[in-house]
Length: 116
Length: 113
Image (cartoon, rainbow over all chains, first blue to last red; front, side, top):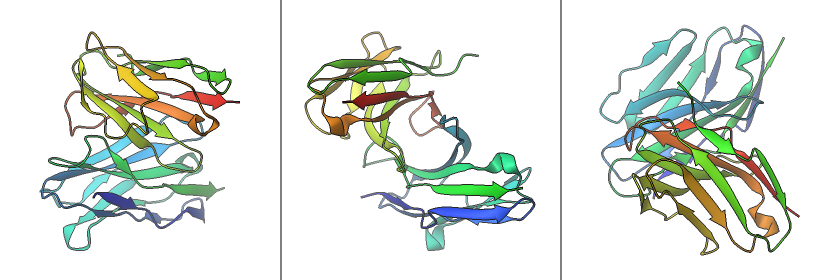
């Protein structure tokens, strides 16, 4: 069965520090998709990134970067030079191409607090 | 364009009552998903529609929960004989294709007294 583990329940850093959110996944499928979503205090989930299992290239988008490593089943998310507006709950999620449920399997989330 | 919308934003009901939650997906999105999010948890998958049909309802917790999407656009999640444990935020998402990014609505907060 598919599973997503976000071991860090809460992280608190001071503004401008770099921070990495960990995500480890389990799946028996060879084709799958990984996602990160942000849930700010307003509550609405915001899509950040989608990666498929065949593309291990790391991705950078502004201050955000993602490190996908199939060898360790990890898809970690780094925020560089964090800002107070980055404060939110961040969810990692998995979708399998074949087998398993059709919906996303989410981790429990990491609550990121950026202190000014 | 308009995002996913959900109504009502809040619903308070009494134990044993029937409720309906509505989702209006992004125009043209054929895939529609319902999730339930309890406090401090990630969203949990309930049901997935491809067009008008429920392609996967493996996440529905029991037969008190039912969802429809009769014309392939708006969907309604129906909960019969509500229980206090049903209290949660119910989220709807849509995507243009299964496996692609899902865009979420603001959710309906259901409180069962």
